Length: 78
Length: 472
Ligand code: SF4
Ligand code: SF4
Image: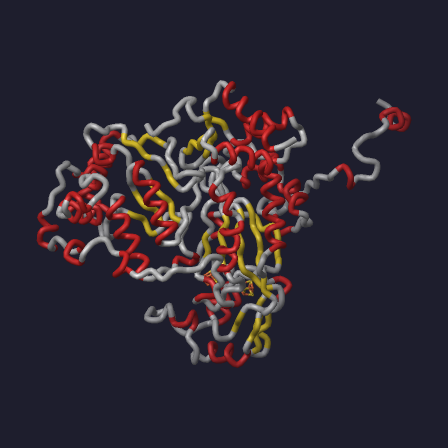
């Protein structure tokens, strides 16, 4: 399994989930459902790559941070 | 140990970096300030100025007057932001509710923390604070700065932000209070490229680590708190800036059990400098204290009528574990029972000193009172060496993080997870045996919970066999 596979699962999950903002652990669970051996750090790496290429964005309340797909839900400056 | 920066350090020269002239910086008189009124009516805030302590309201009004007197092109965000901030605060007092919308999609590229989005929900009345985001800046270890740095920072923030800042927030960061979305990237650039200072943590990140003044100025420091803080901050950059945890996580470093950064109350993982061998005693100096030749607490309680120093009452009887005694004028300490509280050392600093075999005690799980009330950290690792590059400590940290990320629920702090899963489970993760000092309450619990592997034959039993000997 490569980071690319994990990225695909994360993207599918972020696109299809009812929620537009997801906790990191939600992304991890989604990946581990398909790839039970996926390590947290690898999932993190995949999520970070999606952030760095602009596909996903961070959403922060100050105390907690969530991940969202750019273009889904609130994704721009209010 | 000399400081070895991980990147080359620039010398900051305020005269070269400054934005404002001296005339611009002192552009109002105290007389003008006294008569100055902001445009909103703020009776409750005016009231706050009347107390015995300096008030942030006074500071804010001063800043507002100063901004009003600067030329428009000398400020990149609203000239009225401070005034509108006070106006909105008064409205919040009137309504008993905040008028900030919480959070949102603001940040600097690639960072999941460091910027807290703030938007006003009464923007028509207070346009100056329509968007007023906060930036957290990773403070220098022990908060040492020189004036070139501070002045450059203040000029930059006057120009690109509200000019208001907190030195420092409770986690330790410098808090830059209020700017617009457009200014976030430029401020970030100036901070990192000109001032060589990174943003701090916020959200579900490792929060900005912070340490006491340590070996730089304090003779009690048993560990190099600044070095540890710097090393772990640098080593865990990814955890600081790119969130992956269930919730926030804080490290704090106290050089000794005096706990000047209160790590035990304020961090998920508290590092407290300590020693393993015996307290060093200079018996001649003990006599000097007894005879009144040396001043207890280095004279800090002088000038009050507390009478002559009484070693029995003020030191021996105050030892929390009762492990001290005076025998024929000699001070004795039963070091096995000393819990390193520092009391006797603080009172008689010339006579007593920490031992030479130094390291850290590591405690886990403090937090503020949102769920279940406030919690102090629990002493878990009584002693560990703390020397660069701290690989032994990094191993502990990573084990704990792996467990918390695996088992923790969203928004569950480490301390809450330990409570939910039990300390016994946590000790398995850290790999240390249980000790009575870890039990806060009850200290007299007669129940023992056995682990299955500790019980011969396990928990399974043969009921038939049992019944053959015991009738129903
Ligand atoms: S915690 Fe201890 S070492 Fe650190 S500044 Fe305070 S007294 Fe000194
Ligand atoms: S450090 Fe505290 S516990 Fe230890 S001998 Fe001194 S007063 Fe007693």
